[in-house]
Image 1 (cartoon, helix red, strand yellow):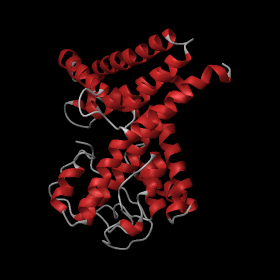
Image 2 (cartoon, rainbow, N blue to C red):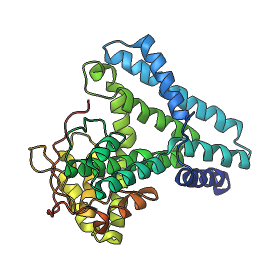
Image 3 (tube, rainbow, N blue to C red):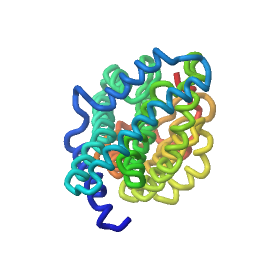
Image 4 (tube, rainbow, N blue to C red):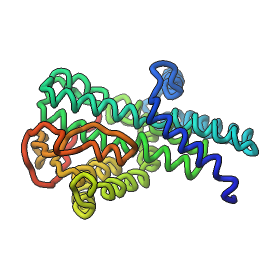
Amino acid sequence: MTLSRHWPSAVGLAVGYLADRVVGDPGRGHPVAGFGAAAVWLEARCYADRRAAGLVHTGALVGAGVALGVVVERLISNRSLSTVVTTAAATWAVLGGRSLSREAATVAGQLADGRLVAARDQVRHLVGRDTAELSTEEVARATVESVAENASDAIVAPLLWGAVAGLPGLIGYRAVNTLDAMIGHRTPRYLEFGWAAARLDDLANWVPARLAALAAAAWAPLIGGTAGTAIAVVRRDADRHPSPNAGAAAAAFAGAVDVQLTIGESRRAAGLRASGLATSSCLAGALAALRTDTAPDVGDVDVRVRFAYESRE
């Protein structure tokens, strides 16, 4: 393909990204929520405690999303304006950067104001664990972890798949990632049924997670860190995380902002020297907001990441 064939999609991606930054997710009627409802409906009819059943479930839903993208893309292939508008709409629908920024900024403000109970409740929007007994340090750590991982899932990965595969890539990736969030858990119900969704999500995010880590390292000097430290922490500690992808992003963020997420295998939070947890624009904003001068001072630690995460519930 020539550059003239690509520019409408590129412009659409940029416009969709800006729409996400300015508008954010709609309060009601989000397309991803509609996909989730369809996934629940299908699960109720095809669930079985077998990997094969989960493979069919995942393949049907992801395949439908990719097929929709292919059909729409072919219908508008020779219409530049339609391509820009459609790609922008799809990009806006699958990104989640503004929502991530808003949630993290809210937690940061609550911690800074000493409203731990409110912060515990708010951080539930970012993590899938029980937050009722978390300390200030644990809430901050959980938010850093979530911002790091979701900077890849909600921003970097959709844009990369959109750039590589157009509408089918955008819609297909969001279908994969949404299914992983819904059924990719190590619970009795989903250990087998959700296996295919979890493994496909691992595959789809392998490259984006590492690009997110490199981007975090590149932006580290703008917030007082160094790229070398961020990369060194990734090389040393990323593989300690049970996820093949989340560890890379989390380690890069930890190294970039000089924060220790956990100590040893005790599963207790360490103090955080840098955890002003708001995010602003794309990955750069996610890093830029983790400034030491905006964080509550809850301790001073060295740059070391030791991942001792509980399995997802």
